[in-house]
Image (cartoon, rainbow, N blue to C red; front, side, top):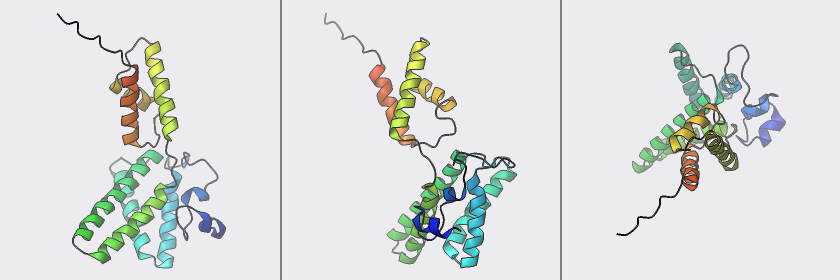
Length: 199
């Protein structure tokens, strides 16, 4: 924990943002394990939560690390920031759904507990670099132009497949934004169908 950074970190007022702990880029990996640096920070944070007797944070971190360990045993270990982001997002969504159910059942204490877990998970999610809308548009436009230069019709599935192997590879994306933008831009370049000639 680094006090001065912990106070200004966007992830939390009392816990240090994982990105603040590394001098390398957030996209970097642990050279020895091939894992994103956040995994090491999660283990450190779990030790700090144990010392601080922060039960909620401790439970959140234990859950994350238990899942990553299970994936490693199945030869599906977390090897990229994108994979780790999806894992954290999935756990956050599970807590969001649980909070809604508890709220509907008037279980205020359990709702508050889930909301606290959501805040912790969101704090870590905030540390990732997500492609901006402008970056997404630029990448899609460049891919459409590449396909057209090759004489290939830039259909939606073709554009998405090319992006997955290129500009979007291992990038963290707003998938809803990507799908909407691809649909719009592909439609804009699609040749208009000739109007039917009345007999």
